[in-house]
Structure formats: structure tokens, C-alpha cells
Amino acid sequence: MLKKFRKDDDGSLTLEAAMVMPIFLLFVVFLATIIRISVADLALRNAVNNTAEILATHAYPAYLAEKAAKSKIDDTIKNYTQDQFDLEQATKLAKGVLEKFNINLMDYVSSISGAILTPVVKENFKESNKDQLFKENSLEIKVEPPSTLENSYIGIIGTYRVSITAPFVNKKITLQKKAYERLWTGS
Image (tube, rainbow, N blue to C red; front, side, top):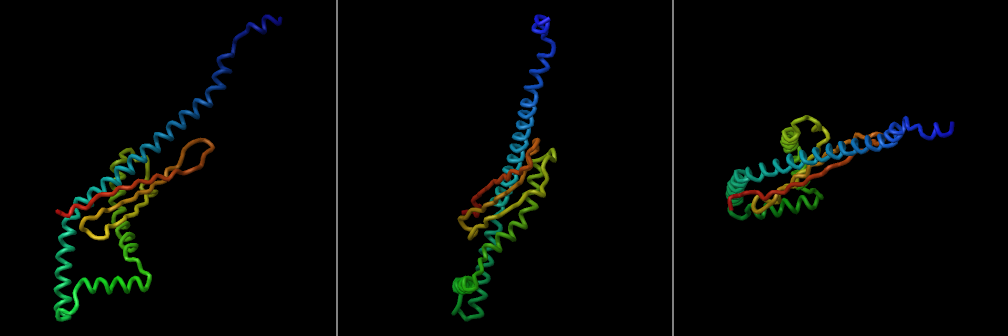
């Protein structure tokens, strides 16, 4: 009777499969999660890079407008003050007043430009994400504006949160991509 029990191999494959199957399924879920994060990372990088490139190539008209406006404002200031005050002096005065009241004008410019560029980056993100796997609601944009339009770089920082879809894991990964482009100003 003992020999019959020893030689019976029925069910041994089922036992091995039951031991290996959970590990294999966890590996497949882990692999799918890594692929999902990689696709979101690629879509975010494409969106941020494309937006920075578009801005850099379209900076020349803004540069020309800034130059013309500076010239016109300088002429107007000189006209009203009978050549005793010019734009450079007015700029220094305005900077002094802003510093006196601890106002950082670049923070306001950054927040305004971020609000303006967020729909553009979201549209580029949507184009990079044709399968609609990721929603634009989790996308945040921050813009590092140039100090001047001449010989400057513009920076766009995109942040996206991806939730991990794995058993027993309730975490989110934050992806962040930065793109810096030199503004083309024709010089």
C-alpha cells in the first residue's frame, strides 16, 4: 500500500503551477505597470519638448515687438520729460519700487505664462497619447520665462502623476520633464 502511494504522480504539475502562477502573474502586472509608466513618460516628454520648440521658434515676432515698444516708450518718456528722463531710468526706478515692496515680477510672469501655456502642453500631451490612456487633468505646467528676449532660454517643466495599478499597491508616481530652448531672435 505504501508503494502505491509513492508512485502516484497525479497532481504534481498542478502543485508546481499553483506555486509558480502567483509569482508569474505579479511579474506580468509589474511589467505592464512599467510599460504604462514609460508610455506616460514618453508622452510627457514629447509634449513639453514640442511646446518649448514652438515657443522658441515663434519668439522672433515677440522680440521685434518688444524692441519697437521699447523705442516708442523711450521716445514718449523723453518727450514728456523734455529729455531729462528715459526708459532705462524708469526701469531702474520701477525695479527699486518693486524691490522695496518685495514684489517679484518674474513670479507673476511665470504664473501667467504657465496659465497660458497649459492648454498648449495639454493638447500636445493628448496628441502624444493617442490611445487616451492618460488624462490631462493630472498634468501641471510651470514656465521659467526668459529675463529678456535677447539671448535667453525658455524653460517648460511638466509634471504628471501616474497611479500604479498593481495588487496591494495604492501609490502614485510623479513624472517630471524639463525642456529648455534658446529663443530664436534672429541674431
